[in-house]
Image 1 (cartoon, rainbow, N blue to C red):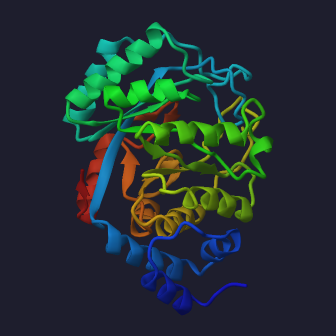
Image 2 (cartoon, rainbow, N blue to C red):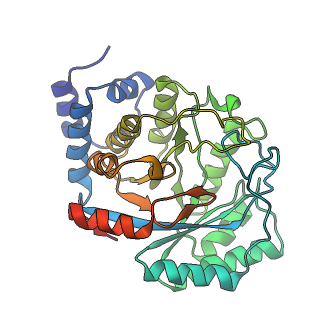
Length: 328
């Protein structure tokens, strides 16, 4: 049963960080009146974070297209005919030049993506390690997303200085097989365990707008919020429907749903960096500000997000300036 806003608010203020959230508790939060939910999230956000600090991260696709997974949202999957064509892996020097350029434009975190089912040892992995080392030598955070990996590979990435490894859960355990069949939910959790054991921080979130229910959204957040420790970074993505994929005809989400997800994630995981990620180009300036008020404190910064559009850098800088936020 939905708790009244004042009692939930009091409980949040009086409690320490929790790792035992239930689906029903999270669903109650998601369904609160929006102004109550944002108020609670903003209160938690101010208690644990600088409310006017927004991290700028840039994401580069190092290996584009030809992925063996059949993720229904992804135009890089080899299972679908989309406008994304398989491209050669970018060389180390080109990636590091992109990192330097991103840093010069204000980004403090450089994320690199490989459209792989899993990392394989060999020259390409050696190049990945060199890219990580190079990005870290610039003084930037380095994040990699490249599918599943082994303990030995995670340890080598840690030794190279990797800050974070991204591996999203995408959705709830119950809805997962409606989206992906080439990899199990358990596979994803095992990858997160490898990352943790290596001492690398975890970047893990999900996507809304794929046809899931509110309970599915709550269940996904429950899985994240019951990990100990919480992921240091949680990207909140809205589906960007891509022609040729099974989800091409999904309607755009209501931006308020994205605000609700950011707010609930902030309440559940107070210290986590909540990243407003894919789908941001579909949001008005006002909707983005609502997400910041709800506790989102990072955006991806650049013209593209792997293969999907992203707001222009100049517009992002102007928005942050207009609301008095500081990029970091």
